[in-house]
Image 1 (cartoon, helix red, strand yellow):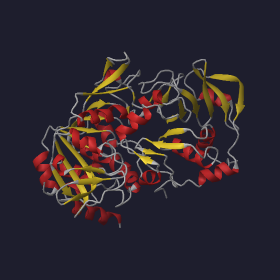
Image 2 (cartoon, rainbow over the protein chains, first blue to last red):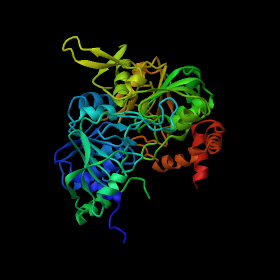
Image 3 (cartoon, helix red, strand yellow):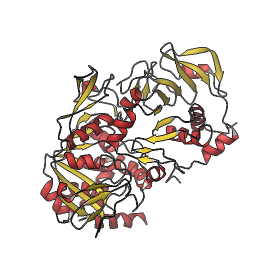
Image 4 (tube, rainbow over the protein chains, first blue to last red):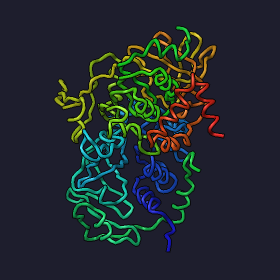
Length: 235
Length: 281
């Protein structure tokens, strides 16, 4: 039987549910943008979307393909320069919530988005940290969105791009991890997913919370809102 | 300052071995100027950019650069820059040195450069492996004792940006997402601004950035010169091109053939545009 929603949709919905209404969110492209825009249309209508290109309070009708799409500027409350964005707004402590993705994560929520392999002779040169190092320590709460696999959930990062001190939740396609006593612990699985599946997809010995629960599947309203968010330029 | 042709500006102002920053944060990316650097065969450039994307992939793949100073190098919303990766992973067509920063560090370094300060100070680069791999030092605030990061200022030899308009005297205005373009021009020893349009008089826009003619060395008319990025109020981002670039750039021969046909074999921006139009029908 095919599921009525995709793994990405489940991730976006579960991340969106965790955005407090009114939160000022630093948003990247892809799943975080999907989650934040969904939250703005459902449970957190007053959340403020900040894109690092300098748009504060963006209200895009269609999902942007890049963080600097014109529609973000057209719908924003304010557009500021990039030096101002990082100095006054992020470093200034005005952002509540930041989303990060990565190629690798360790049990402490430290992230690698720089290289796979040695830095000087990498197997895969990844795009790099971008805003991540300062987002990771400049916002109050960090949400990580990352598909679960042994390649991504590793015992030792090839490179530490950003620190996990403020990671509050990791939303994967299998479930939810939260730090418990300083270590990411599986606290929920998505409907129909077993804890063992998440364990097998984790490179370290994954702790499972004694009160492990199941997330609620996307509601009809959530799915309708999500699917109404068309990505700009996508066919 | 007169409006001059782009090929003339590049010939006069950009030299082999220069530190060159072509800036634009997804908006107003000076593609036409990048193509002119490639046509004129500039070599050994140190390229500076917060978000090197397609035009830097092209410059690197064509062997114009020996070093990249950056904070995020990817094809936004699509994935990898294959030419950048090939240079770093396999040294093709030439090895590329990297000086890697965070966005916050790059932005602060441009602002310090614009202020003609030797370094920028910020609360950043804490922990992680980046500090050991880049030019950053820790300094202590003389007033509070707080430990902060010091990053050397960006002072490029040449700063190149694209803007919507200039007037006939060469005063420039850009608006929408303004990135670090103002800082880039003010931090650089020499600067080139390409524009969509030359108008009789600049009409001041909300949030508009104005660069007086006397801080710019050359203004060049290049309508459509930000393509495939966009120019707010003129044309939209060509998202399909960014997606198509992934396939074009993945293979060395395919990339070289594309660059030969659309950049090296075209004399200027209008011929480049005609060559693109010819294949998209």
